[in-house]
Length: 41
Image (cartoon, rainbow, N blue to C red; front, side):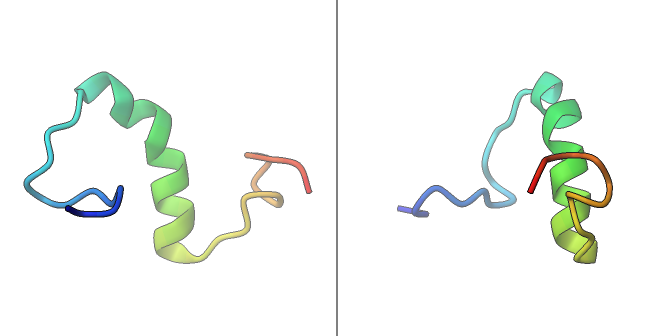
């Protein structure tokens, strides 16, 4: 069991990628989502 984490073997709908891509980039590059306007403090 992967405890809710995605792995390379997990299937994902391509339509979901558009919605999570912004957050994946924020996490990967350690950007601040508040400064990017993706959320509020």
